[in-house]
Length: 391
Image (tube, rainbow, N blue to C red; front, side):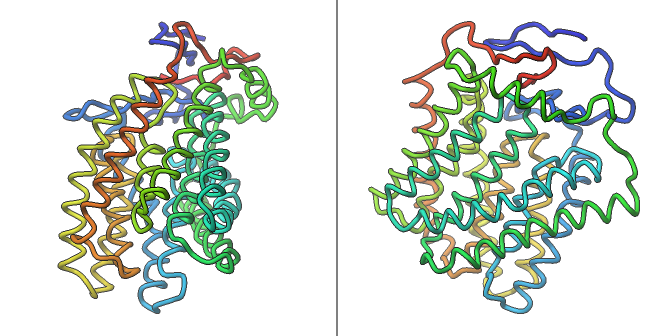
C-alpha cells in the first residue's frame, strides 16, 4: 500500500497500482475514492470529459424514458418518477454496470422512503428541520466509510429535501413513496440491462465491498476527534438551519434552494467547502439565466422540454467529476425547467432562487467558521484501508 502525504487534516491510503480495468475511475471496487476535490473554476478534472459525459448520457436513458411517459401522457406524477431516476443515477455511477446496479438497488427503497418522510415531515416547520437535520447527520457520517457510500447518503437526503420543498398534503406520502421508488428502480433495471448486453466487467473480488470493514469504520469514528463525525454534526445542523430559515422567511415556493445549496457544497474539509462555495455561486448564476430563458421560450412544448431535461440530466452526471461549476449549472437547469412543468414561472422567480442560493452559501460558510476542525483531526478506522480514504 502507498500512503499519500497528509493533506490539511486527513491521511489518504491508496493502492500503489490501480487494479486492471479500473483506469479512469474515481473509486476502487470497494467504493473508496481515488480523488475527491473539485477542479478550480477554469480547470478540468479529475475525470476526462469525453468518457465522463458519455457515461452521463448512458445514465440519462431512464430519465428520458420516464419523462416521455410523464410529459407525454400528462400523468399525475408530474415529473416525480423522472426526478427519482435522476437521483438514483448518482450512486455508484462510476462503477461497472453490475456493481452500479447493486448500489442503485440499495438506494432505491431509501429514496422512496425519504420522499414519503419528506412530505410527512413538511407539515410543520420544526418537524421538517428536525427530519432533514437528522438525515443529514447520517449522510455526513457516511464519509468515514467511503465517498461512494456518502453519495448514497447525500442522494437520499436530497430526496427528502425536494419532497419537503413541494409542500404537499400528508395524504400524498404514499404516492410519493411509489413514484420515487419506481423512478429509482428504472435506473437499476437499466444498469442490469447494460450489464447483460454490453458490460460484463465486474469489481475485483479482492477489493469488493466489505460490510464488516464498513461497520468497523462507523464504530471507530464515533468521536468528535473524527473529521467525519464533526462533519456529520456540522452538516446536519446546517441543513436544519437552512430549512428553518426558509420557513421563517416565508420562502415556501423556492426556499428549498437554501438547504439544496448547503447539501451540494459542504464537505468534511474546510478548504474543499470554501472552493465549492465559489463554484456553486458561479454555476448557479449560469444555470438560472440559461434555464429561465429556456423555460420561457419552450413553455408548453413538452417534447422540447423533455429533450432539454434529458440533456441537463446527462450533463449533471457527466460534469460532476469534470467541472463542478458546470455540474451546478446543469443540475440547476434541470430543477428550474422541471419546476416550470408544475406551473412555476421561470424569470419571475429567478430572484427567489438566487436569494436561496446566497443564503445557503452564507450558512455553509458560517457553519465552518463557528465550528471548524481542530488541527490534526483525522478519520479513525480499525482497518488501514477503510476510514474514508480520499484524495
